[in-house]
Length: 504
Image (tube, rainbow, N blue to C red):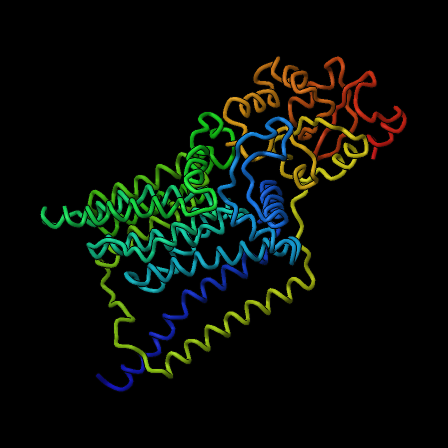
């Protein structure tokens, strides 16, 4: 081996070690720059509020105390650790805190994906897969717990896939990942569900005698992972709470992130599916049935619920990495002997410089930019008026629930769909959209509502203008308020003052 070739191998190894960090830094800076787009979901508001309650009381919630329709009902927070982290970051840096925390989680996810893919693929292809994964996930990159759990999901599936690729079983040393995941977000049930299909990838093609021994090891690991998922303050109730979210039936088709994928117009996910088919045809891939099953399972999840598209985007490349790498004609770099101390020093110095540059850029950007929550889910003026009128029982739109909770106002409904259940939540949706004509008036009377807070273009808001006993008090391009007439509403203002408020 010539000296020049040996030097090129060393330089390549150093560069390869820094690639995941560079990709992560790029993703981090991008999402900090577009940070306001991460603050578009009112669920972020009640997530932070619950985190603040946990910190203030040094306890976890076991019942609901934010609504007046389900007060005292059993409820556990399957994302309590994420909520605490968001609350701490918000208390320290206002909305910049959750933005930075979310951007760091996305950056770590991208870096980990590149690092895992590098074991089988060339650097450009690994980076390309990571970029496509981020592109497909843009619609769901929000300051919410599922983003903090994303790097844990990638690490967990990476461990399972690596074990399956080497025809072995995962090490029990990785079980704390499952415990961490189950404290961050209820999506940990996906990690448990993937253990079975992953084990069949490992078993495929082995002798029957070895299959039995390996299957027993995977089975024991699965049992241990199930036990690890219950290592939370709630114990086994965490698992039950996560499963309850998946049992909401028809309601899941109405909540936008749980709705099926829509192909009415061309989108990135549709392009990814075409690309996946094209890769298989062009490369002439021959996959084992268990790997095909895994890809079909992840694709079905993404087709069924749009919130699962990021799982498809980040996990399918891990399933395909080894088969694609085996068909690559290019040599795999990074397989040489260990680097010298000087080479490791250079790599560490480069990593520190990248981190320092990222933090400096963040500080400079925060110095002249103030992150703000999206206005279409924060009806500030309308809620100010309701507080002035001392309204006690407000029939609110689903998307306004988080903001009302952040203002310490009891809600009719909010984003905790598992608390309200399919029947009640569907009744509310049908009332607001006028799917059932009598649902609206029935709910208003049954819960003794004295004011409504609807989205500006909601059908129910238009109908209330013509229902006897109700009058429109306020409207802007975000929300509409109706109150009961006849002086029955709490803290009613004189008619002249009400008119002045409506004009503002």
